[in-house]
Length: 80
Image 1 (spheres, one colour):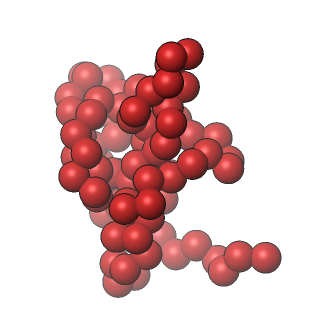
Image 2 (image 1 turned 30 degrees about the vertical axis):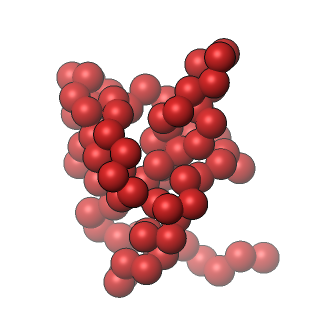
């Protein structure tokens, strides 16, 4: 069993996707600031992931979706 997840107020604990495959399924998901997710989904604005990747939010991850290792490392190093 994994450790409980702690929510950090400015970063969404559910990553958003980039790097799509041929069938439009993201290869991995990235962590982005919560307040930018809805804005990007509605307005089409670009967001910046913790790792620096820039993309518009187009997909929502499902449990078990692959997460960008750089984003994960940065997210886990942030103070709660």
